[in-house]
Structure formats: structure tokens, C-alpha cells
Length: 261
Image (cartoon, rainbow, N blue to C red):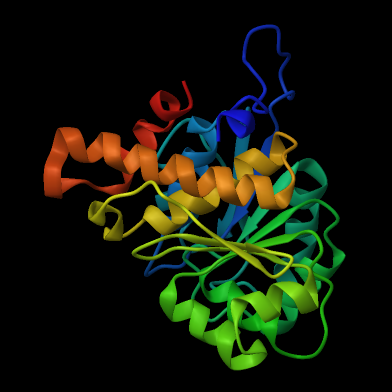
């Protein structure tokens, strides 16, 4: 793990943009905070700039969360093909893209087209996972999927196992749970850091943002997934030392720089 930590660009001597730009597309009126958590996690992992893209319905709410996050909007209440122009514009700007945190009922065709046509690394999370799996073969050689145990079941139903999914599609999987699992090229690794406090809501979005940040900083997908899980787990341990069972996702995010340092 020390080897992977050494691959993260250092702030000293870096110019603006050297440590990446991350775009995050997600959110819904029921879950407006999820894209913001992913974005803040990316910033704490070292990303220079994070830009969120959310529906106009929740734009004002999400934009009020943090002055550190740029926040754009697309028309409508759900992610549909009408939002793709804005999504592709964000993908052109970014070094890595997150799709899915906080989505409710995104249009499957829109999710699939976004993944298929985006050339930068894409982290596919939450309810964007299901649409990405259905509807025929989809190129996934630039993707990292970050399912929880319930979302893993969608992959198992479609491919039999996350190992088979990884082998057949070239996707990398970072599965969150009691023990985080990373699968690349059909090979499974387990992450040894973590705490039971990481079952709290929002830590999956935190992992998504960490992984996206590492991808935007130039790490390969398997390395970003492995290191991202380790950083999340260790940050959770540090937060638990201070807060015990009262840890929330933002506590974990605030300790990411300490973990990396």
C-alpha cells in the first residue's frame, strides 16, 4: 500500500490541474446530499476541482452544501437523454467522472449512452449500476463499479458473480461491505482496513469520490480501487477513534488527508 500511496501527486511543486478534475452526476430530491459527499471526498483526496451536475429541482439545495464544490444543473427532475448534452460537456472538462450517487430511476438508455461514449475513467455507483448491466453488451474497459451488497446482487443476477462480470466486461469492481472486496481481471482481493462504523449512510459515496479522485490523478483502475478502499477504511478507523459509534460520513471525509499523509 505504501507503493500506491507514493503514486499520488504531491502538492509541492504542482500546478493547478495537475491533481485532476472530477465530475459528479447524481442526486435526487430524496437524496440530494450523495453527489456532494462524493465531491467532498474527491477534494479531500487531492483533486483540484470538483464539479457536480444535478437536476434543476435540487440545484439550489446542493449548491448550498459547500462553497468548495462547483454545481451545475440539467433540466427536469430525473436523469434522462435530455441531460446528456450537459453530461458530455462535464465529461469533456473532467479527468474522471462519477455517475449515480443519489439517483432515483435514471433513464437506462441515458446511463448506457453516457458510459459508452465517455472516454475518461467512469465510476459507476448506486442506481446507475442496474441500467449499465442491462440492454446488451456495453464496453466497460474504463469503468470502476462501486456496488454495496444489495447492488452486487444485480451483478450476480446478470453475470453469476462479480469475478465473472469483471472477466467478461473488463470492469473493475470495488464492493463495499463488512469486508471490502476489489475485483479486477477476475481476481479478488480483500481490504484489511475498516470499522463497523463504516456502515453509516454516505460512506459508499465517500468511496466513490475517493476512487474517482485517484483515477483523475492518474492511477490505473485496479490501483485506484484498491487504494481507495484502503483509504476509506483507514479514515473510518481514525474517525471512530474520535467519535466512537457516532461517526458520520463527513467525519470520515475529513480524515482522508490524515490517512494519506
